Every structure is written in C-alpha cells, then in structure tokens.
Image 1 (cartoon, rainbow, N blue to C red):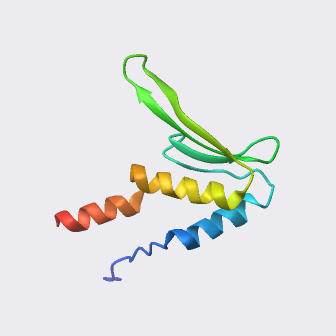
Image 2 (cartoon, rainbow, N blue to C red):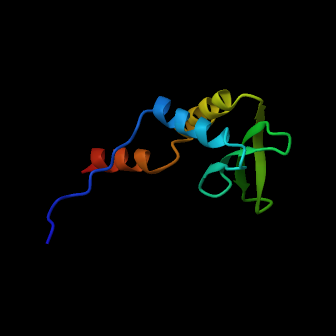
Length: 103
C-alpha cells in the first residue's frame, strides 16, 4: 500500500502559454477550453485564433456570448486566454488554493 499523497504541480503561465502556442501552431485544429464552452481558445477557418466567453442568462435560460476576441498571433491569443482564466479563476489550481486556505 502506498501512503504517499499525490502532489499537483502547477506551472507558471509562461510555461503554459508556450505549450498552448506549440499546440495551436500545429495547424491541426486543436482548441483549449475550460468548463465546456465557458472560455474556449480555438482556431478559426482562416487559421486566426478566437478567445470567447459565454455566460448563462437565467432569464432567457441560454448561454449568451459575453465577448469574442480574434488574434492572428498564437502567443497573443494564449496570453489573453490565460489572463482571462485568471480573471475568472477557472480551473483546479484556484480550487486547490482555496481548499488549502480553508483547511
């Protein structure tokens, strides 16, 4: 039986941005998203990049487009995507930080 705890390693945004750029510049059509289509970064047909965000509107019971920003440069798209991820505190690193502060 292994009693060791799993250690999560969270890389800094510069390292993550480089990985995203490498993935996107492959021109295969990869995209990255958080929580479904809440914050996607994707290729467009003309090989530009789009970062967008949808928000749920309880009145219409639909996801409405909050914003969409288009980039020709993968690095700029990745940086913007990561900035928005931090702004909205999306993903497990924020949850892990919150849990460690409350325990």
